[in-house]
Length: 196
Image (cartoon, rainbow, N blue to C red; front, side, top):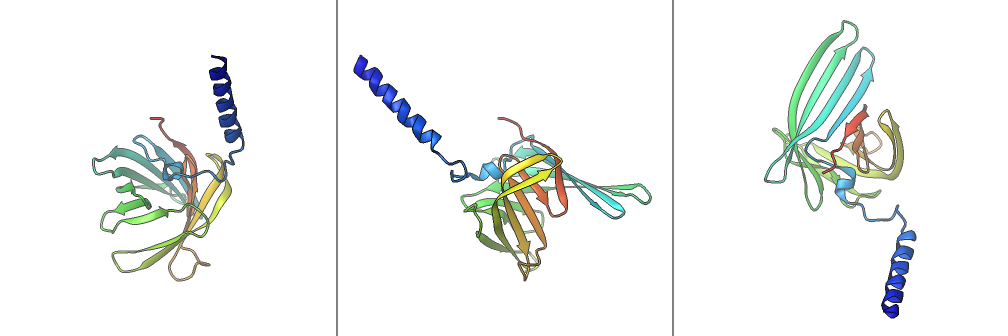
């Protein structure tokens, strides 16, 4: 009996020592760490330019049997010079594959917005329905970002460009367990990720 207790204590000590020496920065990162799509999750963003305020809310409303999540996008544009308000509602579809996060927008082909491996230097591209080649690259993998929704560490920064990576069209920043915290001029204001 005493031998069994000593064996169990030794096993616990080994497991504890292994866990204490684990480096959280080099741990395996799973796609859902950066893109926690779940039914009921939503992200609210804001962008401001002279004369206009833009609000964007993305909400996961349904998971289909084929693995796609349906995301409803509600955009509000306020013309601050005359206080006119315009609203646009559309949907897109996202799904996880072995290669990364794929987005499908009506009238376009599926495209990856985040692709494995999730580290600096990873590059990929996709071709739009009008034959434009979009190039993407993870240019940072341990960024800290401050937004009104909070401060996020270990973020991935992805840039998208046509011909010149030094002149990106847009950049996305993905935070672990949150999702996209900036997309171009849009900055995350608040979010909700259901615990399921």
